[in-house]
Length: 140
Image (cartoon, rainbow, N blue to C red; front, side):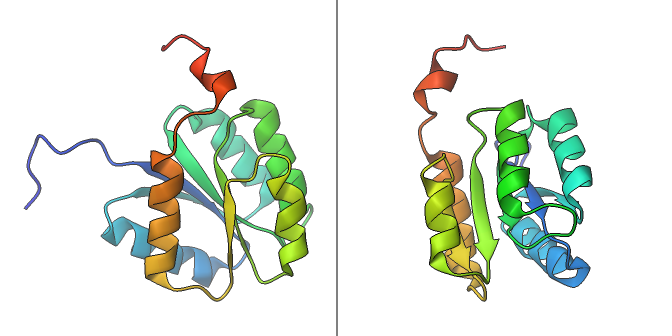
C-alpha cells in the first residue's frame, strides 16, 4: 500500500542498446521505487534528457552504443547540464571509466553486476551533495 505522503519517486534515465537488458533494468529499479525513463539510442537519450532534465536525478549509461560512445553521450549530457549525475554500466575495462571519472563521471559498475550493488550505487549518487556549480544557482 502506498501512502499519499510518500516523497516523490526519484527519476532515472537508463541508456542501453540492448532492449532486454534495458527492460530488466527498468523493472528492477521500479521495484525499488524509482521512476525510470529508458532510451536505446544515443540520440533518443540526449533528447529525452534535454526535455526532462529537471525531473531526472541521475543517468545510467552503457559505454558501447551504436552511433556514438558512452563517453560522447556523457559529453553531450554535460553540455545540457554540467552537473549531470552519470554512472557508467560497462563490460569494458576499468581504464575506460577511469578517464571519464576525471571529467565528472559519478561512478561505474562492471557488467555483470548484482541488483543490490546497482541499487546501492543509484542511491549513493542520488543522495550525494550537489556540486558547487549547481549549488550557486538559485532554486527554480
